[in-house]
Image 1 (cartoon, rainbow, N blue to C red):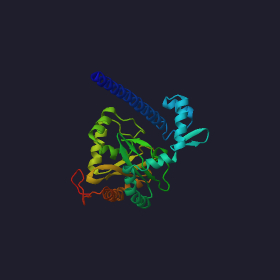
Image 2: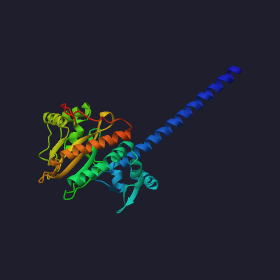
Image 3: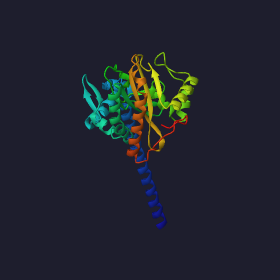
Image 4: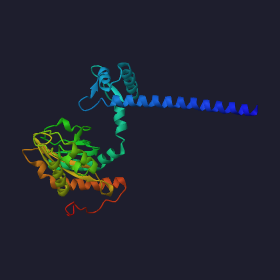
Length: 292
């Protein structure tokens, strides 16, 4: 009898364990499902779609209207989304507050912004800060100069390809070989008639940017704007972002700003290293052996 009782107890334990595992698995799956659906909703918003109706969110995310409405209501109550005009919804302030805590991006801005302001005053050109995220660049900060036409594609938070601007060329030149190789093999889509798109021209462009220590673009990605960009070096000498000067192609101001731009990126790199708690080298060597 004792053996039977022990066996029954063991069976009960096994059954309870199986039931618990099934319940936990079901809860985990439900949690993942809710997270996935929520991320699909966030994925509907971008620079071109800053405010959307529930119907538009449903269509773009592939979620049923009822599901989209329920999740949107939850996100509104938390502050991740806000009601906008015309029965639409936009990204909420609380989500922006959370995103602004990203240490990598906030560190870039803290180190760069004071020096970007000085550079803008000195050159009267627009100044941009851009890190790389996988195979794209992101406009993280922008200061528009007087008389420089506003370009909506450079709005903060928008992404751009790693070949269609001086910023992209710098980020591409210092990207991992895997990212470079993927772009070379895939090819690039021309944004304007001056874009460098072929595999061999792109390789030559990257080599030139590395040799010079900065990139120059002429009317790419915008027909009437030109710019120069240089890398910002993080702790340990890594290339983590870039700063660019941009202005009207006709006056040639951006090209005349190479020297102050390089001085600015060096100061930003120094301050970034301090924030990271690492020692910044007093002098750096460019790829062609010169000291910068």
